[in-house]
Image 1 (spheres, rainbow, N blue to C red):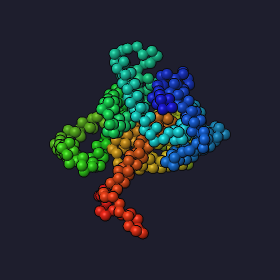
Image 2 (image 1 turned 45 degrees about the horizontal axis):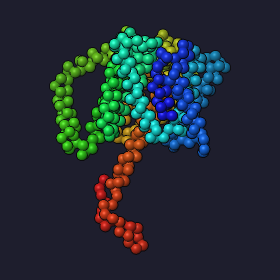
Image 3 (image 1 turned 90 degrees about the vertical axis):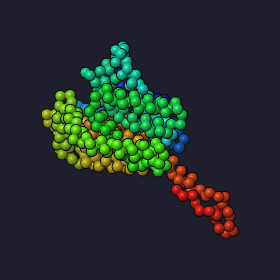
Image 4 (image 1 turned 60 degrees about the horizontal axis):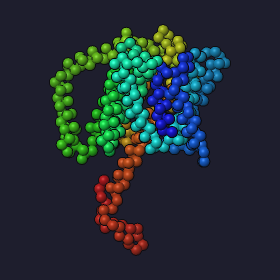
Length: 425
């Protein structure tokens, strides 16, 4: 079951392998098969059971499907705001809902953690091999790995590859840090390096922004949450005191030149690919204008933005705006509430890599519409589950520290007590 899920998630980005005119490829077929098996196996015995932590996901999508269905009915009755992609988007939403039901009902903590590690390693490894083959001009059958000068691998759009690997460097760091074997450390270290190389080859400005934001979060929190014992040894002193001191000194010394370089880099990113930044701003603006046409419950599934004007059948390429046009303020508030709940759970785990992985996925979603993709929700759920496991591990460590340091001495009529004080936290 795990292998089937991992293969489906890895291949879900292989859009070049889809049947012409049909948004179904090997990844979607494998994921659909896994969902059917998971629901079948999970439904035997006592029926489907979802952990309490999984209920907010299902509640959010249950409300969303009701909103989207209502909007589709209104669009059919009044022939307004319906787009050519409405049916495809609605089916994609139903598939994500089905996928989450299966994932939350079948996947337990260890299963999801293991699958996440495999998906991270397999995705980065497969795309790195494709990049090497493309650089060497090796025959790749029906695949065309280049989109102009940008690496697209097995996807039709390089941004699909960028979306697939956004969280991988930070999840790879998480698994690398917890690997007990040298072979696993080598594997996840190579995974991080491969993801960075592949991401750079896509020339995705959105990925650069997402990784930059995630890297800032990672290093800031890694420094802020450093344990005392980690910061007092030689490596800790170098990492948490000397390195920040040198960086601050360099920033102060070269602040003017750094500002000029940052400004030039920002302009080049904004104007990449013939003024892509201007196009994005237009799409966002027109998407917001479309949202105000039906602000409460939205306009239903499909793209409601456009470069020339609203309602041109294009997406805004921003998950918040696109989701708002689809489900209105009701759906938007529900989505933001779900994200806040997830973010608080990840934050309480106090693991910089997990926080950075979540930041990377959400930052990239501000430049692309990601809510219809099962792999997006898999990473969100996996990060949340890994954070919950980290919180449980920390709680067990604290409980172990609270164990009495001497054998308990029973006293008549009283609970057993330790003759010595409890060990400090």
